[in-house]
Image (cartoon, rainbow, N blue to C red; front, side, top):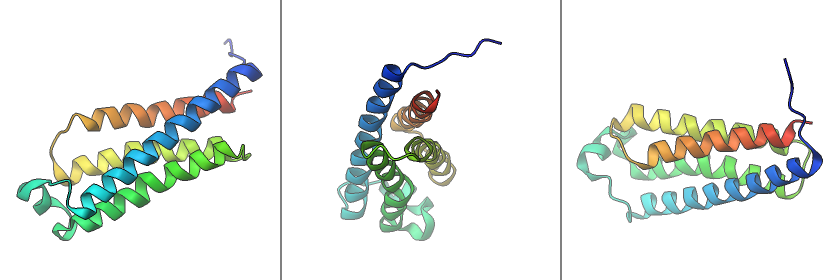
Amino acid sequence: MTRHVTSAPERVRHRGALTTLTATVAVWAYAGAVGIIGGGIDFGPTIEGRLPWQSTTLAGVALLLGVAGPMTAAAVALWRQAPYATRTAVIAGVMLVGWILVQLAFIRTFSWLQPVCVVLGLAVVGLAVRAATP
C-alpha cells in the first residue's frame, strides 16, 4: 500500500483553504440563524409545525450552536495555527453533515442547500485530514 506524503507547502495551502471555507460556512450559518430567529426566513406552516415546539427561535439557536459555533471555533483555531485546529475542523465538518441529517429527520423536506452543505461538510473534513497529514 502506497501512502501519499503531503509536502509542507501543500499542507499550508490546504490549511489556508480550510480556514477560508470554515469561516465562510460560519458566516452563512450566522446569517441563516439571524434570518430564522428574526423572521426573515419563513419556513411556512408545514415545516414550522414539524420543528420542536414549533419554534423557529429554537431552530435558529440550534443552527448557531450546531454549525456556526463549531465552524467559528475551527476557523479561529486554524487562523491562530493552534495544534488542535485540524481536529476542530474535522469535528465542525462532521457536525455540519450531522446537522443536515437531523434537519432532514425533523422537517422531512428537501432543499437544494442540503446537498450543498453535505458537500461543504465533507470538504471541511477532507481538507482537515489533508492539512494534518504529514
